[in-house]
Length: 262
Image (cartoon, rainbow, N blue to C red; front, side):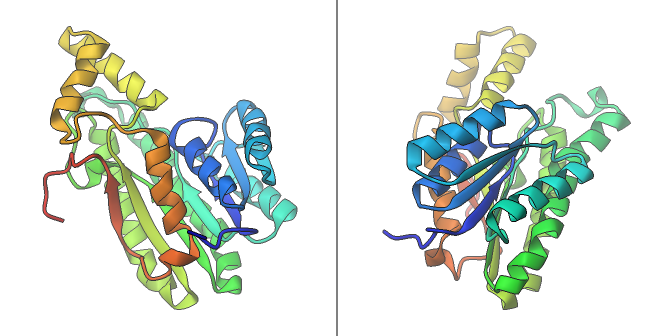
């Protein structure tokens, strides 16, 4: 299937590892020119690796998406190199786990800056270019927690739900410009973030990390955690020309974990 992404310019946040990197790989494989950012200089090496693996034009940018000035600079660098951005993937590491009373006001502020403000600021930076092209795809990586809250993740449950409200409202506003806005909800997927949550659960419950993974797998009808490439496949489709009539949706890639009808 030709997804119509050849030559399109994509910007993927938090792409040095995990889901962000998998999405950047998939977009590069489809022929997009891909700018990626992360907080450490590892992103520069990752950009070269993705470019070499897929024969794609790539750009690595060191930037912290929780810092508004970094967002503006990173998007400006990508536009200067490739031109207006057609595909935006907002993404960031999750806030720390723990119950409500374990989080200070400062922890809440950091969570909002990392997982909500970053989405708003990235969108603000790319939207004028998408409108001028009358074509755009905005994909927000959120969580299964927006449909079924996960115990012990009150920061993530709360802030990612706010992103969903933002995205659903924005989708209506920009639809006349042929811009779609969707959220992708990763379930338990084999990433560094999940390794960290497994270690946290193991310590708090007095079990092994293998037992922590086993507990999740028992909740998933497919009986296993997902792989980043499985999540990235949906992202590539939603970023494509073929998904031109799919907008305002929150779609889970979770092996059936969410129990609700919708």
